[in-house]
Amino acid sequence: MTLTMYVDGDRWRAHQRGLLAEFPGLVPVAKGNGYGFGNRRLAEEAARLGSPLLAVGTADEAAAMADAFPGDLLVLTPYRAGEPEVELPADRVVRTVAHPEALAALPAGARVVVECMTSMRRHGIRIGDLAELPVGHLKVEGFALHLPLDRPDGSDPVDEVTGWVRALEAAGLPTGTAYLSHLAAKDVQRLAERHPDTEFRSRIGTRLWLGDVGALSSRATVLDVTPIGRGERYGYRQHKAPSAGHLLVVAGGTAHGVGLEAPKYVNGILPRAKGLARAGLATMNRTLSPYTWQGKQLWFAEPPHMQVSILFLPGELKAPAVGDELSLTIRHTTTHFDQVVER
Image 1 (cartoon, helix red, strand yellow):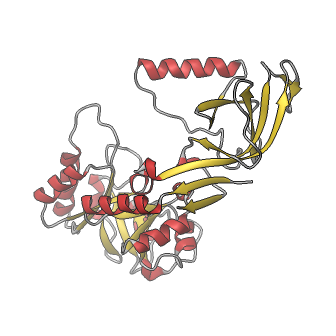
Image 2 (cartoon, rainbow, N blue to C red; image 1 turned 60 degrees about the horizontal axis):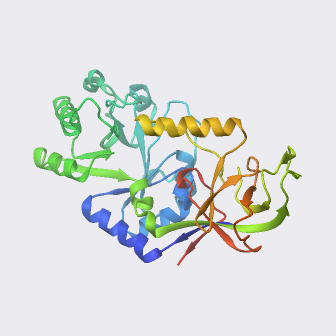
């Protein structure tokens, strides 16, 4: 019983090498569910790429990957004064810090990156705090800017970063290294030309590991096939079948992330109309699944179970055999695969 991600290894790694050439000094990111691959596998891949630094989400993730990655580990979640202690290789871990009180609470000699408050408005040191930051006892290894994906006001991200470089210089803080998120390669190049004494390093996860969708495919094993007639009842809620066909029990349920969807930002008339249509169908207990068979996207027969889903296959389609695999389109950052198979 497996939900499997298949990987074209040569193509996948060729994409990574291309991105490394596009973003000199790129810092790979491995966090959360490891973008579907698992964090330890990505840590090993980052080592294979020759990266001296790996960015991880939390201190717990850094501890879990310390033996899988031989280089330094940059923890992206800002350190919080009084947070529970995690056993970490202190000489290899760099903590992100976004508040003055957190800087003051860190032990002498701790390696830190100072997170700056950008137009994201998420967290970070503010410009007004720069002059009196308590960093004398720390090893400040750079600053970080997490930038928004979209800029509907037409503002220039390069100008925003430049403003911070100048503010840091004015405060006497080191500007030798800047860690950036969500900046295009052309904008990184513009920054390098404006500030030749600063090394701009892009932290990239999604585009590095999932950027070539053609290198990845997801499939689910068919576990059972049951013929059903029109009007016959099935499932936990004993709904009636809308027509004759088959019920397919396939690998993949809520424990894998199937049927769970993160909120999306919707922009434009057509996406909104589609969203309303899906919501209307859901009120009638009709929800499209991410599974396809013979090129047709199938409906959930009922909401996914914990480890399997039950799908309705219309009678006009030939049923798969037990052990066959169905394709599915699923969000890798919310999916836990049973196995990752490289081909």
